[in-house]
Structures are given as C-alpha cells and as structure tokens.
Length: 80
Image 1: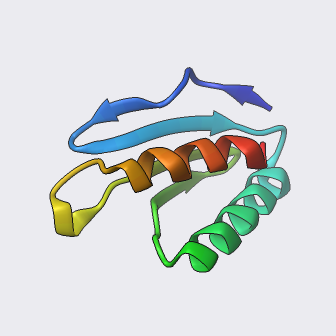
Image 2: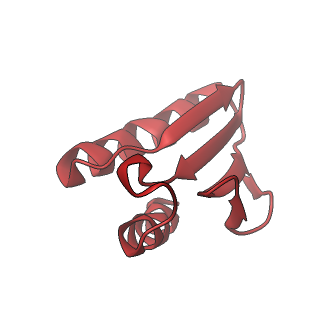
C-alpha cells in the first residue's frame, strides 16, 4: 500500500487518498472503515477506484470539519 500524502483540508472536509496493492485489499480496508463509521454513527464519503480509496470526513450539519472529524481521521489512520 502507498499513501498519497496526509490528510488535507479540501472543500470543508478532511481528505486522504490511499493506494492499496489490489482491489481486495482496498475493499478490505473500506470494510474496516465502515465498521468504525457505524460504531461511531458518523460516516465519511468514500470513493473507490480499483485499488485507490479516497476518504472525506466532514460534518454536514456543521458545514465543515469538526473535532469529531479530526478524531475519526486519526482513527482511520490506525486502521492502516
């Protein structure tokens, strides 16, 4: 897996793109991320393109990034 930099603030969201060795690895990561999101009842936007996954944490009701988004971005990093 390779990382496309750290989290960046873009369009009122924390965004990070990751590239995995293959499609199954990418989907496995997304499954773990989905478990985290469900347990916290806070869900990121996720885009999957073959082995590349882009994650965007934002709080729509607040209109941007909150401390909760920053915490969940850090917890996302722990899943790696």
